[in-house]
Image 1 (spheres, rainbow, N blue to C red):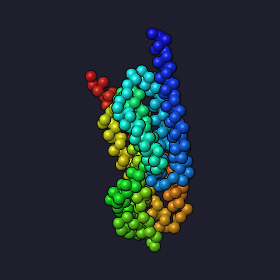
Image 2: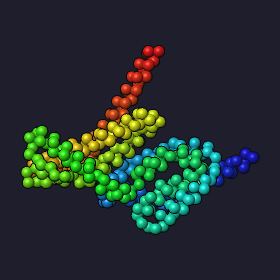
Image 3: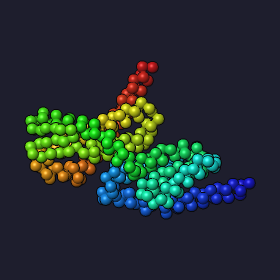
Image 4: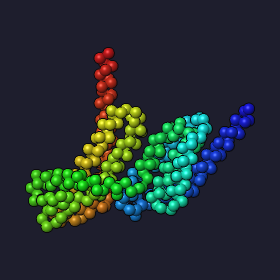
Length: 295
């Protein structure tokens, strides 16, 4: 009996290693292509919206590694949905269409979870699967671009209002700001969608990392706060860009718009989300301490 259990265990491990090896062969070139595009900005603008995957994908792998013993303890059971998702993933991969090939990665991972461990396996690795899905480049940014017009108008109007308070002669029409004879457009990309996506993604990672993802109140406050911080930061960024461009400070404009200045600005904004979470934790600890003292 003991020998049989050991053989079954070794067969299971060998099967899992074969699956991991196959996934590496199939998807390593794709993931390398994503990283090359994100790092060198050689990928389409829509795909740059998913550059948060640079930190999200390794984090997903790390979480999966931590849960490996829990995975092994789960009973091997095949769920029919596994075959469905695996079939869809294979079909998408074989089309050769870049977006479908991209989407085949999270789909095949979902299928594998269903096929090997059933629904319990999917639940166990649910969060890393969400991270992979949200980091997979697709056409969502392109599809929602028409819906960003109200946000573009709001940012343009608010930026103009701020500049007027500093005595800058600026006029605004729809999504365009004019300072002197220079015109600045708050384009969909400049409306901060990429920063917004990244803020929400990083917030989810922080909530999981600090084990606050089960606290619905704290999670809701952090996510809403991250959205507010992202929009506010983008208003300030567009205000600065309009000022730099309108006053012919072209070097500063390009530094903040498409050089490393923009990366620094985004990093500072993400840092503010960490500070917000720390503030929420301190408030929670103070409330808990007050309740203990009262008792």
